[in-house]
Length: 381
Image (tube, rainbow, N blue to C red; front, side, top):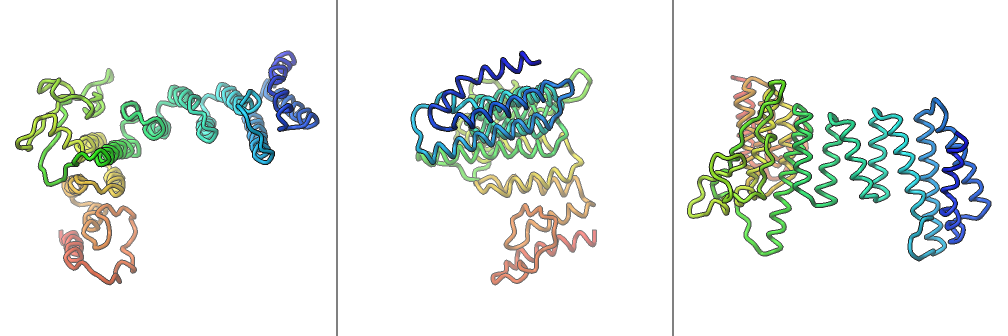
């Protein structure tokens, strides 16, 4: 044990020498740092090392890095980053790696490591950590969402983000939050595409054009006899060229209702008005047909977006509520709220209609009457 600790301390020498040379720490302070690290290393080498020993060591190194940054700013230290400036961050990652190796099943450690990677802007390390975490905890939806969010927002890799969400749904097919986030991903992608086309001066289609996108996907069966929803059984996505596939083939795009347009152009129009998101929503409902909470989550996701086609998706959800939950009180409440004046059709607060909304200056009497009509129908049915 002593030899291992001595070896780890000897590896610190170049880092410590540079920290002293650049004026981050004095020689006396470096001696204290070495002593603290020695104590922590001996604690970690105990036969029964505890999780809190690793966390205390990490906390010490994080505070040390914060102090180094403050002194760099106060003293105006400039120049190319060397081993001394990146050494502390590397050490924190090394401690996290040892901690997760010893406590593999502790999800909180993995999540803390992921957060530190984002905080320290360790992008390459974050990709490695997410891969290891998903390999160990493949049935944790939060990790799949985190990984997909990273790929979409940080790296801009939409295909990788979609693939991660679909893999996550194969592992967690009955998780409502994961389905909702998958729909959100597809809608965010549509919003990004529409914004990009606007910058390039390309026209964006509106919802007045009646077209439908259907992906010719067949459900697959697992070895245990269960069925994988069609939307997960293939990675067919809008980037595919519809003209390269024949009708009926997996991933083929069938577009109807677009007069005078080529299949490729019609497919693009459908995608830009939420066609793929609707396929994802259908997959979610097929996986969880009896979940009213899922419909509520979908409405909450749709409430954030306002591009053409969103109203059609909302209407599809409300039609499903009427068909699948005809005698459910919460279903009737949601269907009534879509008509309430001044409120979005996707009001999912679950709270009574507020007194403030009742006293608005301009009252949409038509919407008010429609809302009351739904409630009256619910009572009399």
